Image (cartoon, rainbow, N blue to C red):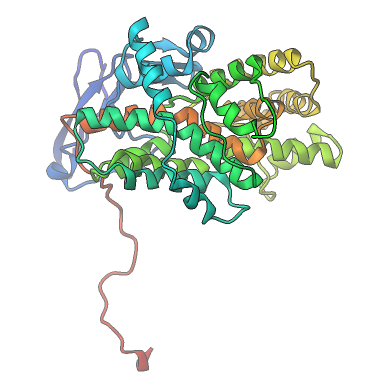
Length: 432
Ligand code: CMC
């Protein structure tokens, strides 16, 4: 197979069974080039095989750009570093959903709409009550978001999509906080309309009816930053799940519920919980970063350095750079030191000077430092991935909307290479 200079040619040519096959090349706005294999099977009978999809683009998207080699992440063209410094989560949510930064009046109206939809139907109290006390909040949130589909069943149109997006953004913090309160055995705390988005969540999490609770602005800003950094990450496992499930034309609540389940796994969003548990384990054992790194490198040991490595980033994840700095700032402003942060810094130092990690291009990802901040904020470990889901929500919704509006939209249906038995005759049970 040969690709002659892509600049001069707009197709790739190869020979199969003596016949030339030409497939078009498609170029993105950042000069990434893809082979469009849409005609491959009809012209040759061939399919492609790409377990884990490391080489396959599933869609064209105008939402998020990542250059994993150069450590670049942009939402709708805006660098993550600028958004993290200058924007708010609701502003970023608007940007992801509607493509441009909102004007002042648009943002105010959006914040007002989201604020006015935060309450859950009172029947949700019984829904939470039916679940075991020690239920992990991730499946609780996924089930609750799925259950929203039973409350909002109108036929969908563009206006309903917008309504559903606002309802989801508004109710997700309430669902998340209630899943925690259920676990704690404390009464649910109603949302407060005079609080901003992150403060309202912290209030519902930590207030009780017994005493006044004032949200610390340092924690509120730290949470807003974490939500911004998690808001989208193009076609990762959970987003691809939202798109694939949504491609059957199921409604938005059902598609997002599936995304939350996909995010829960330790190879994906669940890694933030695993990182803190790993740091706790190291502290509990002997605090030795070197010893742990030796185990993480050992192929006979299943231990991995959690929060390290990424399918796309082959240099430092830009979100980890921002979070590493934020860790120091948040802990400093809260007037705390943190032994786990010291262990994390040591692990990073040891790993990044070790040939195993260097040769495989394994760097800290977003989950490596986020847990340290969550923990300093008093967020319980099993809620870490729920906060990831809260942040990722606008990205999932934006990706779902983009898919449904795509003129090339079709139900997602991969093919396979069958490697099972060839045809054989049924054997009756007596003769087996
Ligand atoms: N610790 C030790 N070795 C690792 C690690 C790690 N964290 N990550 C990858 N490797 C090794 C792996 O053993 C393999 O080695 P070899 O080539 O000798 O077989 C090589 O690096 C490539 O790894 P891979 O598993 O084939 O890479 P992948 O792209 O399929 O997996 C990953 C990416 C993120 C699942 C993986 O790096 C990992 O399990 N990391 C730890 C979990 C984690 O932090 N997940 C959060 C991802 S970022 C947030 C998100 O998007 O959800």
